[in-house]
Length: 378
Image (cartoon, rainbow, N blue to C red; front, side, top):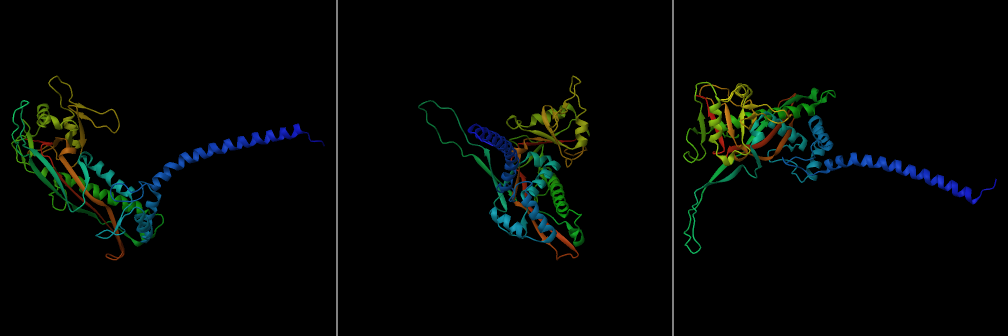
């Protein structure tokens, strides 16, 4: 058989076409894999976020390390992860900083359980007390001509709000048999118990906490009928309803107008579900409902144009109660956190149980009492 130059060129062209097709096919597959893999790698290698944990939210390394520690007491992976994220292996009170994904689970449940957690400002504290400096005003000013003298003005009044950092703790426990049972997800159980306990405690404290080793609740401050400028610093104003055991359209208007106009942008109503139901039935003088139900999932309802946040820790409508709050909580209330959630596995204290002692350092206080108003039921 005679092979001509033409035959060689034809075979070479066919091989070249086949290789081009092969290259294109696998390049497309590589592009797809790269698109799917890149976000995973970025998440896996992302440095620790807020809360002092390690491993990105949903991090497989973080989940694996926490599972090994909970089920077997193996802390080697936690030590390694915390070393990578420049975290100290053991906290001052013992235990390990939990992975960020668990910190986020606790944070998300706290926000779901508490409108005040959702609305208030959260800051990181560096010590056992977080100091917030507040300008109370008082500096003088005036008008002057081009050559007129400028007398010295008065010094502005400054106050300091000290937010003590308390320790929030949970101590769920499991038997060794439960931990050893491969069908029982010990890590998920412990994570859920911690998140539920912390969210419940925080939601309650932000309304009723006495400020001793916990946040100072909004309803524990001195409450008067005095307006802004007349009240002592750190006391809250309440607007009393016109009728006994009832809330009317005029009451809501009076509450909203009691908040200084500079604080109304970003302000919201806070109440429980029972109060929300009662207020949703209120009509204005023209017979129109003053409550606007949201048509978008995740967006709050509106009352007189301002968002309504539901918090079941708010009181019911009753004589002398404060069932409705209105204010700019981002400017009025500060939550201070130190470190993240820490976990200590203790298989010795209460055998045959294994305790999982968990702590978080947190405090909270009103920092601008002009920003929060209360509705008092007559």
